[in-house]
Length: 349
Image (cartoon, rainbow, N blue to C red; front, side, top):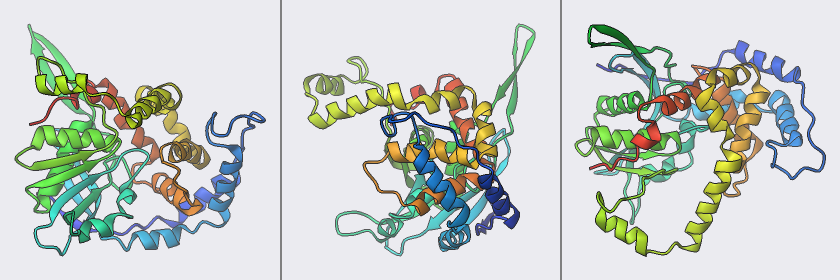
């Protein structure tokens, strides 16, 4: 049975003091003179400006108070074969009759904060779109949810040989946790929105709990399988005979660039998460530079304010599990059999 309690963010004073001490002791690297801006990562001038403001101007307590205006809770969710986790979430019901329960699942380097700007519109609805009861959790290992350090241990006997099977917390368990959260809130039927890592969580929710519980899911950062003539003849024929639009061609070009120039973070976090975990945990400036690059590269000319950037980074730095924990899922995704993105390509019912 899940226990749900109200929650307020309250970072201890000593953690804020420790952050400022580390910022003051930062050693900055040099950078190549006259290099194309952003071609080699986060620019030194930007990072210096943000570090100075983080240390001397940014007011975490004011941000914390603003975030605490959101209706936040934690729920104790038991995941089969693993542990019981404190799942932090925003829960904003709509006052509109027949509003649709919506599970909003973030990715990396996001958090529950992704929902905040559209939350008023989601719960209000309108003439041409529905209203939603919004549930926006912090993924386990992210934000103010628990860490997932426990490994599930099983055994397999084959011809009198006992094999120990260890499985770390993966997207299967993420899907189970948030499905159980929705049930605990009384939402037996619901829709899901998932972006980035939330995409694969949304797909596994649909594959494992739809259509009985998950009635619809909307995803971005999609990695679908190409339809085949044998399995999906009508869709295959349509794909083969429909020319690509200019927008679609540009999208393929962007994907090609990302695979060559923007995907290094994924390979590192998916292969050696413990290694990158040291700088993420010990160096707030390293964490800032690592994530800030993505905040710049992954938006369509959105003009971030310094307060917005540092709010996003601070949620990672002050997170319950620590910023290194957010890489665990990348390793587990790639070392699952089959790998998560391949499994997510299955056609749901």
